[in-house]
Length: 272
Image 1: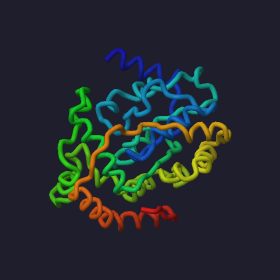
Image 2: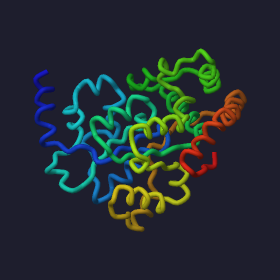
Image 3: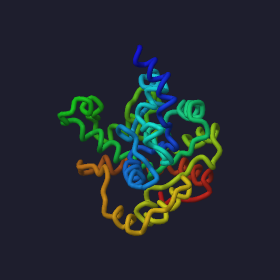
């Protein structure tokens, strides 16, 4: 308790706050974006792992704002550089934008989206790979089910996303998540990207990010280096069964109306 009081009293004075957030989406390339930006001369990494999970996990938020600031460099270390919290689940939880606005004000945020069907399958692959993992924390969130079974259960009208740690389908309803953020922030506060843009034109999309953050663009040499880097590439590989393939086709139809609403909201279309 004493340490908590010290942190909440002293850290707001000596510690820097994040200048921008990478809010999601899960399994959409946020690790790669964070690693690219951490190599920018005007950006300073935070003191811990990129995902702080302050605003989405009640046990962390209960630690107080000083606990959060403890993950960032001091104001002396930071000087004029920018710092970032990259927690990709921030986009998903409904209560998060309200507390971000309350604690950080009109902060800039970046969201990277991915075809929701591909995102769902990638997320399942990750969680399913934890089944035989020696790390107890990862094993605790392992998904024993097949992909087809998981999707079938989530499509059940009685399924409650609030009681599931996975939510392969619900996390892909980006239009609902962004509309929730727009209830608290102006659209100028959010830069929305698509993971395919990183694959198709890395230079252009990183220039957009730099312009959004009001920092210098990366050099062409640095862009070339980035094109040869791989970040957070899953080592898991599962063969899709016929049932999995059928569920993937079903999800394409399921997400179609959500995607159309997203395109209308953003004023641009993706190849989903």
